[in-house]
Length: 261
Length: 273
Image 1 (cartoon, chains in turn orange, green):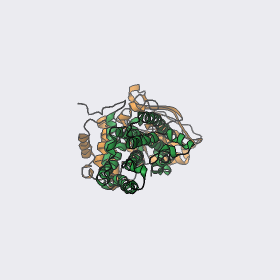
Image 2 (cartoon, rainbow over the protein chains, first blue to last red; image 1 turned 180 degrees about the vertical axis):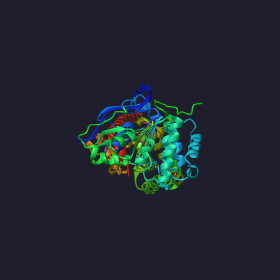
Image 3 (cartoon, one colour; image 1 turned 120 degrees about the vertical axis):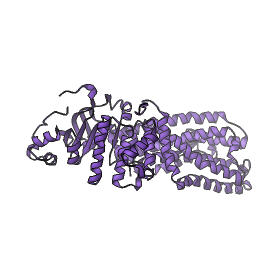
Image 4 (tube, rainbow over the protein chains, first blue to last red; image 1 turned 180 degrees about the horizontal axis):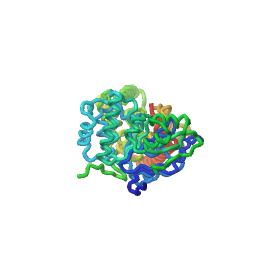
């Protein structure tokens, strides 16, 4: 199935990153269309976070092309940074500021028209009301994740990049976060690129999965396609096959399926 | 009305305002921080005030102008506090692991730098203004006796403090928090050749060349020219201003280069506690 250029909100081609002679991302290519959720799956060190960092402009690629919302992220990233946002457990919000102060600060930074109204809206949607006057440093892991999510949505982004969005959350809170993301996506038509180790999360949220190993995309497809292709029952088993290079995922096999392109 | 954010693709004062607001939240939440800002300039002024009182009866140099040492101390603190205010505002972002959030926001490096300059100015005024008042009350020595040139001296020193602050933050961006102590130490490298308490002429010839290549020495020489000789030296002011422009350009260049290198090496994600 082909997608029009305007539907492609993220286009990555030939993306490479080399650190000290080591290729950590190698010829990565994929497309995310409007309203689609795509997941990057892979073991630690597979290149997921590096790929997301390059998409955000935090890291300059060694080679390749990244376009987000039609703009070249290496040359013109400031044209689109106001329309995207991200959340990662490796990046904190200022800990000595309260939740409300953090959200007002980021709302102003992103040029949100009425920061206080947006704060009230997010507080209601994410059940942050009782936490608004608490400092970020005083919050539990789950509360921090909700505050980070509020920050990631403060500018009503068209593209959201999420690195392990439910890491260290209890199942109930994690489920709540996933439901919220689904609802937001449906309401706003946003596109989501997420990196995760949580297979259930990926199966539930992602329309397309990009399996990464050693900096390369070694396979791609919908969760059900991948499960079927590897003759497994769950995505977790597929993941283990790919990570351990066992069964149908031996390294000699070329990447199969190009449905995400 | 659309609820979409207003995307200012070019320079946006509102983003600078947001950054300043974030730092003001931090200061407002911590009275010890505000006290700390005022503490050292005040103690410095008290020490040098007593020394001045002693020297007034024992030194013909000091007897020529009672406020010369106290004015020098307060102007030196403008440079020191300005640089520290710039560097600490930047370090706050690293200590709180907030740098990646800023780097993926629409905030441009130039806006980031201007917000750090603004915070440096605010922190400096909080630190130095009470000390100037106390100097008047306790020692009848007013730095404001310098008149309008005081503003010119202040501007020259604060701009130089920003230039040094940019160089310090560039170093921290390159090598990480291992270099954070330079935020406190860097300024003292130029103290001996800034002619704060003595004229440039007391320095060895080769150090005089170094002194005149910095904007600080002309400022302190200009201060003494007013307080001791009653003379406003425009030439010294222009000398300092031209050097300030040069050092500010070098500082900004170093910061932007380090920022670019940090993006190439992935340091923006790694730098932090």
